[in-house]
Image 1 (cartoon, rainbow, N blue to C red):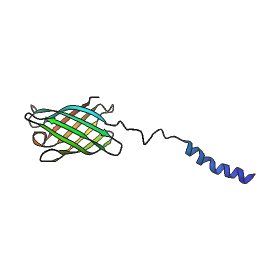
Image 2: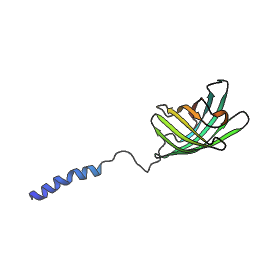
Image 3: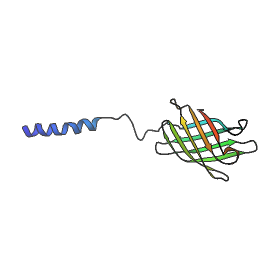
Image 4: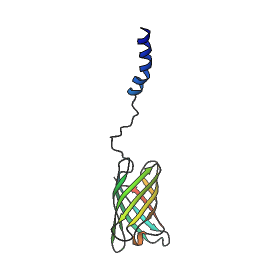
Length: 139
């Protein structure tokens, strides 16, 4: 009887631990920064140069991918989000443009409500150089 009681006491922590639910489901979709974001890029050298930007991204916990476009005065500059990381409040996205220079990035901070991104953007053409960006969630 004593050995049965001892075995039960040894197994109790295992049973309790296995019954615990951490409250997170790794298979559940993560909202994070997933969604449609719209806003503006502003050239810091010439504040009159302001370009609309749209970004559609999917945040799946391990990576962020998506597409976007910057409306320049004479063209639409398309890009893909090839990889990314969102660790509250920091956001970093790797970008691939449809023309040279092909590689760019978006680095910023996401507000607490996850409704606004502010930061910097490097890209192609007029969307490159010291530009600041403000995006708001649009969905």
